[in-house]
Image (cartoon, rainbow, N blue to C red; front, side, top):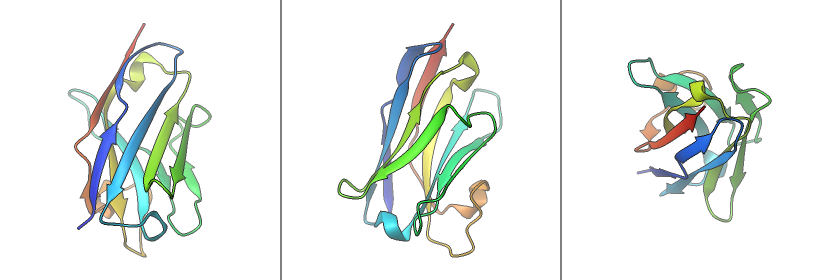
Length: 125
């Protein structure tokens, strides 16, 4: 069964950068569609970014487009979310997710079968 482990969260000043990692076990990135989601206290979970495992095509929510970049390192079986120009409203627990469904929809949480434990990102003013 696929297992995911996020890391790299922490406290950063507004305008700063941070790179989150998601290590994938018992799976191969070429066969998995990957997503990043986040949830702030008292707020609904929201989709952030996604990557098609087959062709590497990336998708971003408008709120992070131009600031966040998703990438992967096949040798390390790890996906990344590089975040720049961070804003206080980016503060949330960030989760990585994986899906092996050929009918995958990048933005829908219900489309993902596997989830990591989350890593906290806090952006101060």
